[in-house]
Image (cartoon, helix red, strand yellow):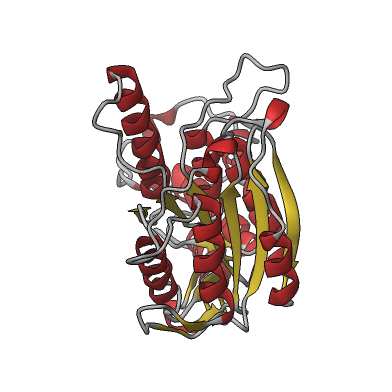
Length: 346
């Protein structure tokens, strides 16, 4: 019964009322007869006095509780009538910090490596509009899905809100350049939150997905005046809204001659992305080449083509009629017994 809900939960605030009425009924002053000697009643059968005093009180209290529950409208959803979602909304949250300009992504034999950001653009283009990859793999594209683009370095910004016009979004993505100067940094926490906010425009019936691509470690912490979010609290925000966050680490493995603190920083950054994905029941990926990125997007594409269902239902099993019938029965039994077996004198 873990799916039990109420159509009018505000009526549950009245649950203490029947208890207070029972307390008043017991404490009220009742009329009595003065009689000089009660020994004449010693021969009468015992046992009905307690029932006569408390039976009606308990039954009326139960009737009140049942009436309150009936007004609240308890129900359990019929899990076979879950409403389908109206498409999928996908937010691409992509790192544009200065390190994304590093040209270390192999593209194929006898070809110069391309920058991490350029490789990310090409892979996402195949994911969004479809086509054939250099290795011949075919992408179907996402023509029916709304897509949004959030870019971030030290500060995230929505560069394209949710749209079905994917060519416009890709034009905006192609225009993105690695940031530098005062905006250089990696603010993963606020970037996730910005992506979640953009996805909210899709409405409650739409499945929402967030894809986070970064090559660095979150390095914008709470000592700043604007108090940016850390990645884990931001991931919890997405998890509360049932938004999976697929993470893609494209920062590569530490160099062979890297210092211990650099190795530690790189390892911790990758672990943060893994925790973000785990918190939201998604997957974390590592991509160190253009082929890796295309493989990652192909897997995400396959995962998010499954039938989508929402947490809303066409039909519920309603229990308020049973509660109403129970309230009437409790009152009827109390009235009947007090006029027969529990009948008392004034």
